[in-house]
Every structure is written in structure tokens, then in C-alpha cells.
Length: 283
Image 1 (cartoon, rainbow, N blue to C red):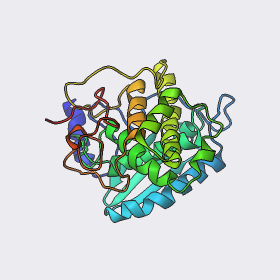
Image 2 (tube, one colour; image 1 turned 30 degrees about the vertical axis):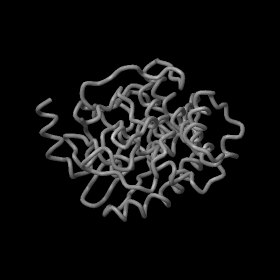
Image 3 (cartoon, rainbow, N blue to C red; image 1 turned 90 degrees about the vertical axis):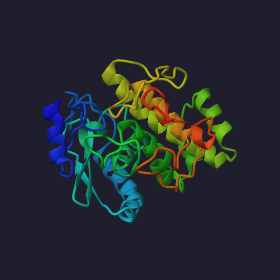
Image 4 (tube, rainbow, N blue to C red; image 1 turned 180 degrees about the horizontal axis):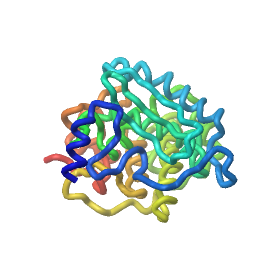
């Protein structure tokens, strides 16, 4: 552990991905590989892969620029790795996207958008941060920001009612969005965001050999905020809470404190809070 921390500190400003527990990327380290043309491949085509990246890049590139970075999305379509990474090199804010992840049969276009938003969230997601990579938001925070801020920027000018028209929407999700938002357009955006989270959470569950659901929230409470990957159900809970949070998605979060721009008890929020299965609010 001491050697890992030393290596991470030495390379934290370079294009090098590591975390406090040795795991890297959108997913914990895994041996799953999905090469181009694999019989068991599902998910996205190469055309969809590039289309999603084009869409998110066009919207988030100026946001990153306004925060002093230069967004660089590397498209590794041929690579079979089932993961994605965020790294930094100077003012280059790098996101690496892999075809192996895009080809997993749980991944939808909207789910892939959330993966991109999560990785950009390591750069823009604010506090809580990773102790060994202080430029990077913690994994749970990247999930939360990626849904609360990034996906809403991506979806805000879309026909979200049409996007979810034929989707199976669990009653708990539909009710949660109705309680948080009065307009049908905002409710549709909320539902679409949470369904994006369900897509990638099904991937987490497949790797963990567990099942996730909006009806079975994680009941665990951490003693201190976790910087590493939460378990699959906890991550779905984070995507759901971010979806029903009524905070303005255009309001920046803070790199030094955890309240600004979020739903938080200190702001009187009752819903949309980061789940205690990974997040411990500061007193």
C-alpha cells in the first residue's frame, strides 16, 4: 500500500490511473474482454460508440475549457477492455473509452453517455476528492456529478419523453421523479437519467454476480466517505438520488467542500442526497 501511494503521488499529474486501493477506471479491475466481432458481444456498434462520444464531447468540451482544462477523449474502439479511465497530463483532461465496455450487452447508448459523464466527473465533480489523486473526485462523487450535472447538460435539449416512451419504468423511479419535479419534461429527464444509471448498474451487477433494483436500496452506512468504487446497488442508489435531486445542474460544485451545487442536509434537502453506503456527510 505504501509503495502504491508513493507511485500514485509521483504520477498524479501524468497520464496514469491509480487509486488508493489499487483499482482503476470506471470499473474495478476485471479480466473480462470483449473483442470486436465476439459472438457474445452486444451493446453498441462502432457507429453508436462514436456518435455518443461526439454528442457528449460537443457539450462538455466548452465546460471543461471554462474550468481551465482541455478535454481529450481517446477512442479505443478496437480495444477489448471492459473499462474507461480518466487521467491528467498538464492541462489535458483525458478520458479513455474502450470498445470492450461499449460492446457489453447491458450497455445502452444512454448508459454509455453516463460512463463518459462519470469519467469527466473525475475532473469536474468536486468534493469529496481522492487522497492520492487530489485532482480527481471520488468514485461515488463522479457517479453523482455525472448524473446530476453532466447527463442533464446532455439531455436538457432532447425529447426525453420520446426517449423513454417505450421503456419499462419501475414504479419507484416514476414516483420519485414525480415527487421531485412538477413538469412532465423534467420528470422525463429524471427518469431517463436514472435509467441510464440502471444500464451501467446492471453491468456492475453482472461482474459482481448480484442483482440491482430501485426497490432494494443499500442499507449500509460508512463510517468515513469511501473514495473507491461502491458496490453495484450502492452505485444505482447514487444514480437514482442524483436523478431526483432538484439542484440546478448549471451551478458548479466546489473542490473544497461537499455542499455547493448539490442536494445536502445542510441545504435542507430531504431527497437527492448522496447515499450513506459510500458518503459520510461532514458535521
